[in-house]
Amino acid sequence: MSDTLVIIPTYNERENVEAIASAVLEACSFADLLFVDDSSPDGTGQLVERMAAGNPRVRLLTRVNKQGLGRAYIAGFRWALERANYQFVVEMDADFSHDPKAIPQLRDAAQTADLVLGSRYIGGIRVVNWPLNRLILSTGAALYVRAVTGMPFRDPTGGFKCFRREVLETIDLDTIHSNGYSFQIEMTHTAWHLGFRIVESPIVFEERREGQSKMSGGIVNEALWMVWQLLARCGWRRRPRVVHPKSVMAVQGGVGA
Image (cartoon, rainbow, N blue to C red):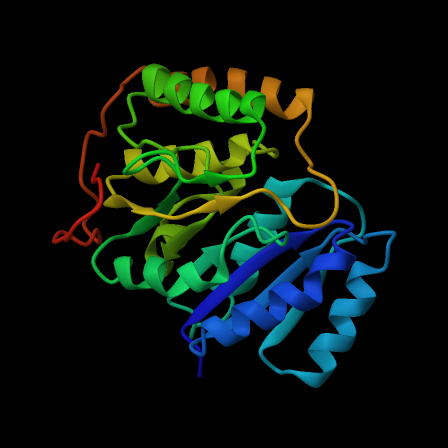
């Protein structure tokens, strides 16, 4: 029985889901795959449903309306926690910007850490085919998040991660309110302030192969304001107070909290 669940949220990703599913399952014999689809009008959900009918390692969770990235991941986390066999939960994009071959690397790092962040900015800039303005936005956002919150991570906005089950069980998912890419910041910040051990693992990020980016001005604005809300939520503290008793204490490599 698989101990790892890979969660991929989708909205109009019909061009990508078959290829990404095949790549994930080939790279990770130890993992199941859950697509969380927001009733995509292009038929993404129906295609995944047919895939799931022919492969027990592929699952589909359909939501009635488009509710955003954060709500999709929260739904996926709850689905995983309802099933006791999943001890590691990976989140990633459907568009091949995250390489499925890196999943084993993240899971291996999670053997001695509580949360592993796939990092584009360790050992240089590991981004392929991005326009300069997008790269400046991303690296600038990372610096902004670190400056405001005090988190020491070089890539706090990335969406390729591996959680140990204990982290998701401890976080009150009802208190996670952000919905765009700031969701990634909020989850990491919450785990960090709960005292969990977080490391970064280097990945290569590639611009999506098919479909359109979901980035928008509203998503950027949400992230700009969210970091200040996070700082206020923890009493304006820029360092965690405690180490969580369930936290894995011995970590080899990476950048720790």
